[in-house]
Length: 446
Image (cartoon, rainbow, N blue to C red; front, side, top):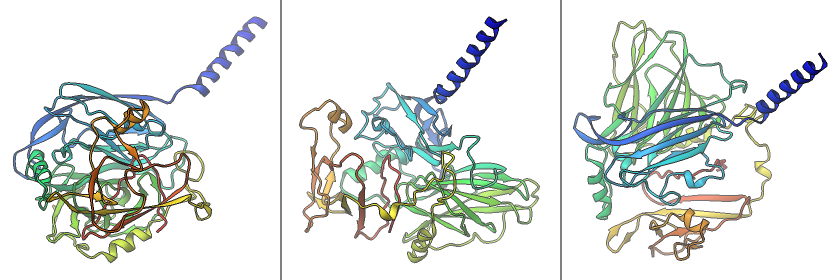
């Protein structure tokens, strides 16, 4: 009898040990990337499909999940996918841009190994080479909180992803020739919502219930404004962080940004416009989807609700109204913010100034007067294997130089591990700029 008790105790201890020390779950995904005919604006185009879909399949994960994503490239040119917002802790070589990864050659495959470590929220993936993003290849990423981690809002009745952005009727390789010849991209031909044009997509809701809308700007050149006819938008998350829950009638979302809103179906049962329009453009582009009440017997009616167009002040005021919810749990059961940002002394300040100079008679783009030239060898590989001659630290200044003497360079800026850096962005151009701080979570202080 004693032996049986001892055996039972040992068995329970083994179970507890495995449970406590077990790995986080793995999710295995296989994608086939192909060309296919698409008609987003009513014109036949060569699109980039993932498993035959445009937009591509949605990725659903839970905090700390491991994602094993095998990508097979059936295009006739190299291909890479970048994971916008996934922080890539200690595995930046999986990020899917030319500086970190070798391109996936035609007919070959590559397996991305990612972990959404200590992350929640709404993000998206997109192709990062050769202007492939203008042909599709993008999709949503939802990182859910673990079941026992509280979130600062009731569980919504449903969860919708909205991938919105500008679109061109020209194929991506035609647009690429524009840039390679030293010209700006032309003005976009329209806007899409989940790969569809005007009234081409429907979100179905039940009266009186509340839904989460995760909205990402997946376009190439244009900021957008998002709104739903007759309904309020309660902001709950921006770029993977819970926010104070301010309410808006419309909301500006700039290139690459992702936000989440709670929307309550509290209006008369019928159909309503879901509207996306361009911001800060000489000609305002607009497209719509449909918010359909499940018991509706009436289609959309009335004018499409308006919003700010080229005015800058409302957008600045709106951005200043966004506040981090420091008392809410993030991916862990403790407040997601820090109360010490005001006491951090940066070790140095970096100023990054974007510009659009002409170099050798062609329109180029530069940061601190350096127009980036991709190296033949990814920079992470060159760094890891100590391959000489690929790049030089300090090949881009940490402060914009005087004058307009822009030049080509594989620019790499040096930084020290664990140092706090204040980064100031400077834009003297006449268009809005979005900066992608790849793999980092940042806190805006001004």
